[in-house]
Length: 555
Image (cartoon, rainbow, N blue to C red; front, side, top):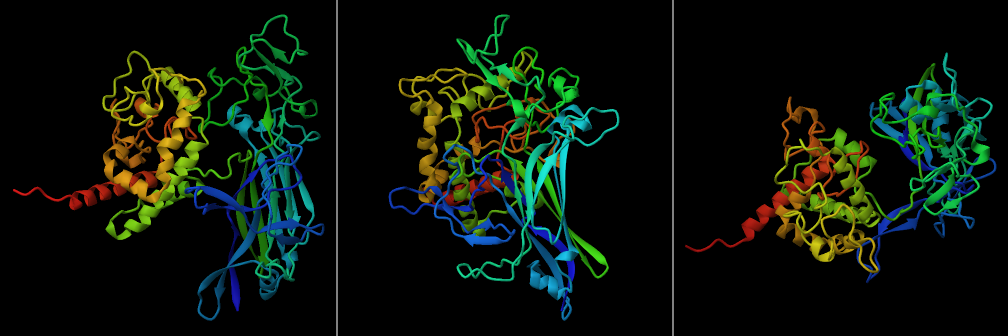
């Protein structure tokens, strides 16, 4: 006999991606290529997927192909499934165990689907967060009974706030997708008998990836267009730029009488929130916002089960974002590494766990190559150095011993940090912009495979780290320190062990790894604290092994 202790969703967080197609993406997984001459690279393979039937039940299948777009160019959305799980206590010994909530488990507990309820709340608070005006947010809510297996559309509008004009009107809602409480089945699929179709699941399908705005958000020039009295909206192309449609006519449904319609980020009238999110400014004139929003959202999914006069609940979140345009390129860290960095102590690296750490380092460098190979390094370098120029003044103190932050960054004079890059970028002078050569307009981007590609091989990587451990240590940008590490009053010079957001130099871009990339706060990105300290300790261990292996000179 088991009793119900608690509920939780598996996974507790999921990523959905917008897409205009009515067919969701199939599941796929990363794996390492095994072709004899392809080297080590990541590819994607189909994985077991579900098709939702007309009655709300599931049909498992193994995809024969992975399609991201339809023939008409519409992108398939990523629509995750989330399972409801239970934490149970055994009466015979009091031990706790976890199991998915199934029809059989409900029967064991003496209840059924009528004792289950689900609520989904999806919101987009971007405009409200920027303006501090609650009525600029918009929310959709769906309440679903445990026996209801129909599709529930999420139509969002701005909730009533006394004295404030709503951005999204009740009779003109913005669709944020749909949710469906899947119908569990006690029967097994003969092709996939290992799949338990009686597990209680919910599917979240995001919106199509459209933008919405007020009636005036119709057409506007790009940043290279010179506007004047003779401009007309009928002209879609000009000698010095283009006129673009901002919002299509049927989506111009928002109120034009809210603070978001007159929002300007840098006037001091509004506090620029951090971390920064998207800013849909006009990019011409005085940069007043067009008052445009999109149909991405964050969703809270709650489930409750009534049992023995009480109620157990579970919560999960779904984050909706843009499509993934490089699915076989993994970031060098993700949400899992970020959470691990917050919740777990730093890893101790020693000879006993050398093999375990080595595998993590090899995996990290492979992910670094995949990230770098999907990046326009030339554009990132230019934008980062221009950002530096806006921060530098005549009173900015010099920082000896650190890489250049101006036009010399990642050029031949940026020593001792630069190594092979100058020989691979012939003709690159000290400039914020790339010195293009015939047939190669993205010189820095083309260098990435030569620098990082060979480090995908474990033997080559370990040999490089042993020989160049001091150079690699120098090239790693430290992460921001924790509060206990900060000095009460930081000096003008950076701490070499960590960065401090109160120190100007720690907020400036340079060629340290990862070069010219930004984090959520629009400042230089680094490895996580765990990754950074793992790398430093691993390099120290390699250096110690190299010293021990070097024969001592005879007297």
